[in-house]
Image (cartoon, rainbow, N blue to C red):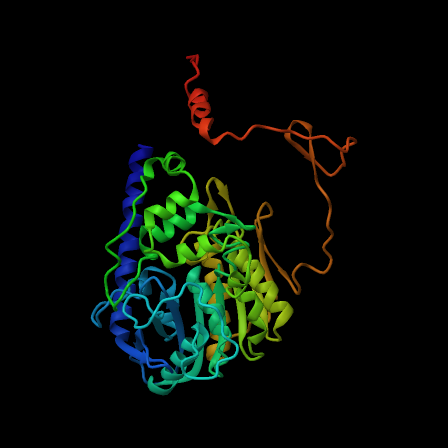
Length: 451
């Protein structure tokens, strides 16, 4: 009986969700039109841009821009992005935002050459001196001058790699850019984000990302992904990578086809090439009039470093209004509909929905529409797991924080008491070639069942 009731509830909930999505979809299509344009940059290159523009002409509307290397599909003015009603962009459509997606230079339908984490150029002298900040500037300038019924205010946001483009946008210096939210932003790919962890090369992440398709060149604008890619058997990644062996063997698999993969191979140390791609070195160019709000997740395995360190760098080097939000999220979970848990750990509320409605939407509404009151939106808005509550601080780290050392103890324990012995340690042999047989032995031990 319980199973039947649960099944009926699940069916009812699914029908309700479907009906809600259909209603939201109808709202967007009834109240928005889609326009596709190729916006010229200062060097003549054109960037493909999809714009969802409110039909309402009774007021002027703010612009929310997202620049991405992952495609602003679906293409075609009759094809709407379902994210406008399936994700929390639907809140922005209710607020009559003009929502803009753009393929960055050299990706998908945009012209030009793509450069991974293209370095910021602080000394532009001619129209041929471009970077992602100048491309953002030129895009915003075109939007402000060509979109009817815009109110002259632009915001930029993006998650992960688009988070990098968001930080770059903050360096553009366009006077119409009022608010930027880099979220889990790619910030320093050598020290802490994605492909390196404290300088140690995370080969599985880097190789799978570039060799599976992202890194392959795209000679001309296209609506389709790269046809050539290397597939590593996914049923046992450990065995596959172990069998391939040394890094040079991975290079043999790709040859000369993956430029940034070759670049990472050629720069194993934190040299000038990497430092030029550390955007923290340039955030002093964020204008005082551009508010920033950096967002991240404490359980984000990819870019937790980027969120903390981007906020820290802006705080130290820029003179703008800067905030940070850190929730109990995996990569991008704050943009999902479910922020109630991580695995079997429950947070006591839907932290994603709460963030969207109490932090992000009010942030952009305030700076782009002059609407609402964000006086309760503190400098640092941090979710404390365990306590399961949001806490607000006027500085981060908190001004009254105290650092305490915690020590490893015998038997795998932790304590605030310093061990008496100065030279105690635990050791084990790391033997990747034989770890598989050890694991197999662990799982093939005889088990006595008691019934």
